[in-house]
Image 1 (tube, rainbow, N blue to C red):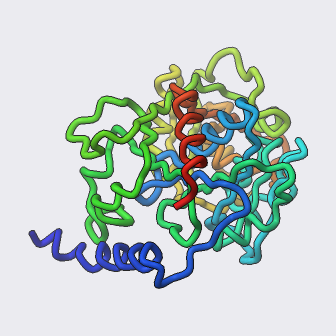
Image 2 (cartoon, rainbow, N blue to C red):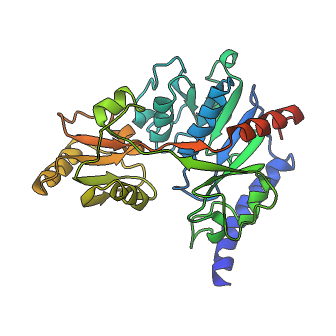
Image 3 (cartoon, rainbow, N blue to C red):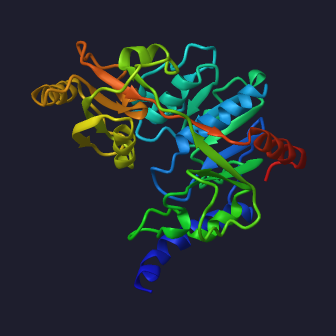
Amino acid sequence: MIRRLAALPWSTVAAVRVALYRGGWLQVRELPRPTISIGALEMGGTGKTPATVAVARALRDAGIRPAIVSRGYGRSGTRPLLVSNGNGDGPLVTASRAGDEPWLMAHLLPEVPVAVAAARELAAALVPTDNVDVFVLDDAFQHVRVRRALDLLVVDAASPFWTQQPPPFGRLREGVAAAARADGFLVRGSDELVGNPCGGKPRLELVARESRLLPLDEWLQDPNGAGLEKAPQSCVAFAGIAKPQRFFHDMRALGTSIELAQQYRDHQVYTATEIKGLAERARLRDCRALVTTEKDAARLAHLELDGTNIVVATYRLTISDEAHLLGMFRKSTSRGSR
């Protein structure tokens, strides 16, 4: 009871804000193309970025031309910014200017335009609409000021949102009842959920593809390259993400002995001195490699690291039933945005 009372102000403010937009008291913006929103009820670590990449890739492979717009959390500037024009060259700016997640999406999908702004409609205005059929809104479930045709909520099966609490005791951005706004659910981990309150709404399973290990310089050239034939026998692993323990677990599952698991805060801004110091700590442990995540690698891309041996562990999600996703999108656009 005490937890519910403490969380009540947070949940109430979020619910009132949504009600003001849905009731017409605050203006809802319309983008020039249909929109698919990808988001979550929790703060951090649910897999929104790989889910957004999976949705954009599925659309692209079906001949539908997507563009991604994002807030660009943690970036150095505040002005709307075109991160990638989608001409195949990838990011036009550094991760510090774009935000690590938009930079990573532009790197993984170089033929998909990516733009960032606090207001998603300002980001969308930077993308030439002649080559865009749909805008994919990254981390936008709470960004209700932009009308969307399809609202998809990411669910982490290992810790689903209905087992969480709003602040100050948990990570929920909104109360569990807010999930009713979603048109469907992207379930990461398993489609078999205990206590699932999602009702009869569609559920699409996000399936993890086999992880690959690529030297940083190779990853920067081609993030989908073949990678190393086998994982290093031992390593120092480091990560500045919301749930680093999941990454460390995945590395151990590849057969690597982690001599040091170094955790940093989410969106950690690295310096060359810091990474070289970590490499020295690895040397003292007789480790030849530092291993990190793709999100961290985005923040290393423009550092002068003088040949420091860094290996990037790739992580990709695919949608188990892409035809279902495409059907949901076509049905939503035929009935109009909400």
